[in-house]
Image (cartoon, rainbow over all chains, first blue to last red; front, side, top):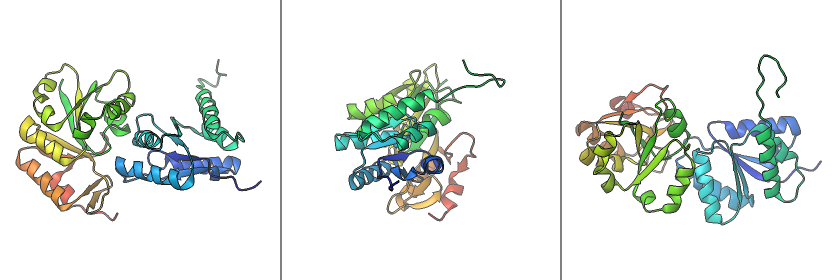
Length: 133
Length: 162
């Protein structure tokens, strides 16, 4: 398989982005479709600037973030407003990014929306070894 | 209850504030004091969407907030006073009677030196923090509740490699 092109940024607290992207790479070999953004030690304005510049340079218009209330999410929303385009998915998890990385949908925003739904339903609770209802 | 935390954090509303402090302190409102945000309906909406429904945000300019703090201190529920910079908090200490100040996040910028993982200060900002203390405010650095509150003298004496 050819080296996949970059299709989305991943940003979040601590090593969230690098950790998830490395997991996607381990499981699918397609971690390179995702660009992990390191924001440790950056203020909100600098996060916004970093996301903006990365999106401008790479042409990527999809961002996955960890927390809806997180500073990366706030910064990403401001960037999308500045750019006037793009898709933000807040609350990203591994099943979501796996689905996105494996998607061949040429409509990247649509692939992100589909992945968001996959991530949403991939959460399950197991008690006492039973099968979830 | 009252304002249970007076915090300087240049990221304003984010995970540490809403979840890290907000949940254990059962915070029901945040007083966000920032002149630019107070003028921007869009930014206010952005921050409102970032907090859980049981938490309210009130937006004020620095001048406006200084006259409202007594009112917020008498609220029946716990709240957080939040500014994005030292100068705004200083105005509230001087005119609004804030007695203790939590430095939660002042991040890297040109001209600043790293003191802690989450605190970078210029010479002018160091002096501004000393002046907060001379106005009677107890100034400590503490990013999350589980961390140790670091006294101002220790903070200013600390230097870390960036």
